[in-house]
Length: 157
Image 1 (cartoon, rainbow, N blue to C red):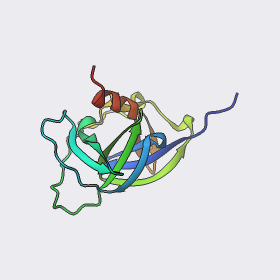
Image 2: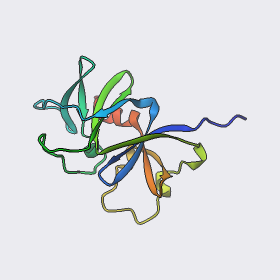
Image 3: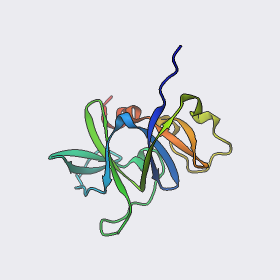
């Protein structure tokens, strides 16, 4: 029986947490794109951003994951980046603190979130939106479940 091809992950950081996003869901990573606030948007949305001549939603990924991080004001200088995600034909973006590289991870190196060393820190990413974790450069990198994030934030139930 042939083995599964390795999972391609874009590595990024939000606060002190390291995340991997399956490259299948990443359209582009770039310098921070400005966004326009939109009154009365749903929770976790920061407004809209112009990307390739169309407006896309800006999602506060730190809020979705329950990290509650500080957001810099527009006039602060930062090394942040904007990541454009695509799932189910929908584009959306999020600002992250750092984008690293794309790595290949064999399936046998991916662990379940329940296998995390205990005790977990008091602030920990919402496990509902994690597929698992891998060890990268001496730290845990949590794999984001982009379709589940999309479902929770964009689909009305």
